[in-house]
Amino acid sequence: MQPAQFELQLKVWKELAISKQVMMRTAAEALKLDPECTPEELKQALDGALKKVAAADASVVAAKEQAKQTILAMEKKLAVSVQVQTMAEAITADLTAKQERMTQQMAVDRTTAVKELQQYKDRVAEKDRAIKAINTALADTPENVLKKMKALKKEKQDEADALKRVEVSLAALRKEKRDEDQQLKEAQENGEKLVTQCRNLHALCTSLLEQLKPLVKDTKTLPTIAELDTKLLEAVEKAGSKEPSKK
Image (tube, rainbow, N blue to C red):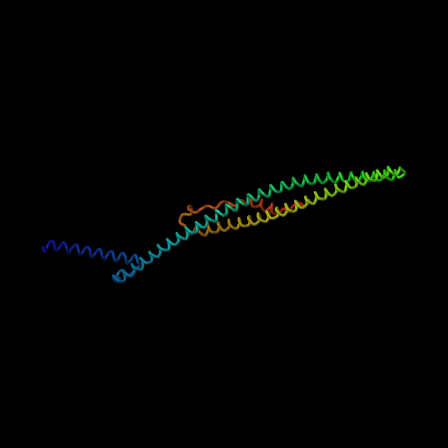
């Protein structure tokens, strides 16, 4: 080997040795080791640092997967919350419609009962007048008295039949009202249960979202929870707290 070539090769090996020493010193300082540590100590420190990096990467992956699962669960719960709110709105509308129908029907039934009662009173008054006429006509002939008695008997029978029809009609109205009151009570209880479920579900979704925020880097990617329609829920509760009319 020529002297010039040997001198150049020696210079290159010298530069490599210096670079290696600088790199080892820099790595030792980064790992907070003694700059004069041995290569074996530096290797062990580097292996430990790499293991910590790998563990951190695995923890980040696990956190992302957990956040993904939590988001999916929240989306399902939000869908259920929307369904519950829709059911609550339908029940409120149904309760309102039933109350309106019952009010109208009871007004009609009350008017009919008043008319029938007045007719019954009129018949009773006619009966009293007929009795007075009989008492006045006791001196009449037996034939006329018999005819008047038959007419009075027929009138009494007609009144009794009319009274029975009124009683049957009133009994049917009372039974229909009891059935409607029972249906309304069941609908009110279901409405109150749905209101409670809707509020609990909304509170659960809100709590899950707050727990999820620290696990997600960009909170804008999280789903938003619709604001709870408190007026609708209060309307359902108000409808459920009303006692059925006892008219």
